[in-house]
Length: 91
Image 1 (spheres, rainbow, N blue to C red):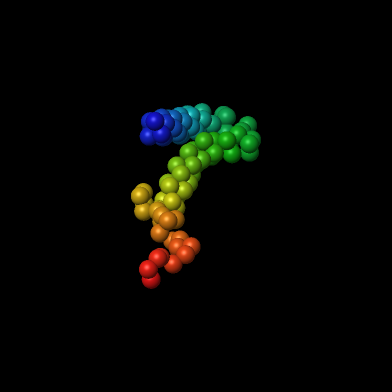
Image 2 (image 1 turned 120 degrees about the vertical axis):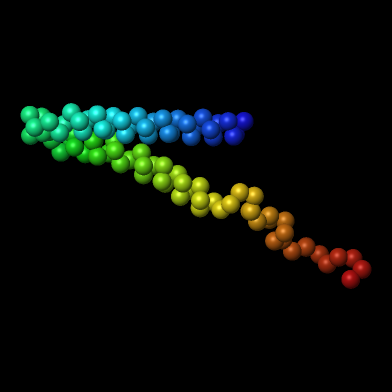
């Protein structure tokens, strides 16, 4: 179940990232016309840059976060680190 949820989440993030980049490229195409460029404010230009840059930053941060956990299945077992409470009998 968790694996399916992970795949759905990953597909949704990729679809959202692609939609943001496509939307940003369409806005760049509309904004870079000479008759429109002079009327565009700073906020609109920041939105265009955000639509183009933030999806890549998000996917990069997710990859760094996943890599920080370490390889799968190589975690330290807590039982191995514990010392026995009392010495074993017969020693």
